[in-house]
Image 1 (tube, rainbow, N blue to C red):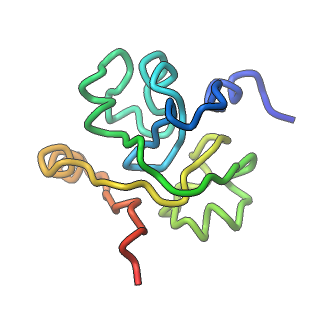
Image 2: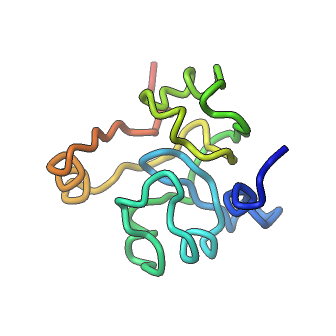
Image 3: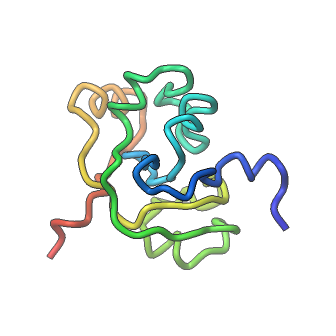
Length: 126
């Protein structure tokens, strides 16, 4: 059973046109949810109350959706290459592939802070 706090990461709209996926972790939420709470997995992206950061760090173009209710035990999280962060990922809805990449300035700053960014865009994978 999901805790009430976990419910905040479940998209609240049925329209996929209103959904966005985090370019760092693939978490899918509505624009309003990103504005209200930022990315629950990636607070270091500072998206809360920052529409420019949301635009730079999320994409409305993504393929497939998966739900992870127990990320620490999920073979799907492992398959999705969640980079050993399965125990810290929040339960929620994730995109299988997210089109686009973080801009170079954001990626460089994350690297300087010790975060390893790997593109979530698997559409070009062979």
